Length: 86
Length: 240
Image (cartoon, rainbow over all chains, first blue to last red; front, side, top):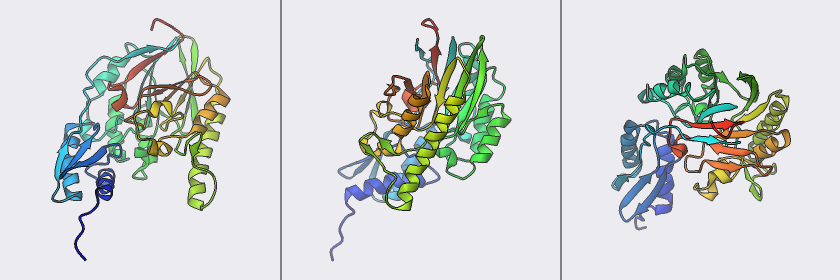
């Protein structure tokens, strides 16, 4: 039987599960999409070090694919927003 | 008037050390209490909680927290609780605490909560033991939340959760994962017992503002949503 490349549908979830379960990541709220030969990862993570580690996690979960890590680290330096509820 | 600083999903680890302490210390200028709505840690490790505990230790306002799903990941939730209590924080799980602020008593009922979904699209207590266990877990959290809210003798009542009680603050998340983000049973508990304000986290892709069916304001204070060290929410004044 000819080799069939893993359907994108399964690969997306394989990557998402790796991002949740791999001790280098532990991220359950990231978005993963595939376009062409590239896996895109988007969402918010807490630190730059964690952001950088995600690329390795995705590469290990999906060898041979290009990885675009488009996650962001929110800038928390702004003043707190105040809401009056009454 | 009470001024509440609230945040969730800080997901602390050793690489987070010092990132919030200065902000939390500054909170004492414009807040009477700091609430943290779960997911203090990244992997649920006591060592991670110890780093977060350093951030809140010694700040001049009461700190009240609930744990989130991440805080249970490594089966170290008891040690996480101990670490936070060692820093002077009050940790709630199916429990309540009352704080006096400027002569007003503020009651906070806290629980992690759980999933299950929302009206018209939720799991049922039916079928396999695993499915029944899932739903019964949420029912137990909701029943306990009702009890502790009703037990509060306070001028202001606040529910502190990790999972969402309403769909409205999940907008932006995929509909398919709503059952893993919260349960209407938590809102039903809040509306039956009564509350003035509800905080939750967990839904990083959601939005900040919502309300229960009875009109109780609900705020999703997940840090990726509010994009601040915390938000300030004032009850009892229109000029906070």
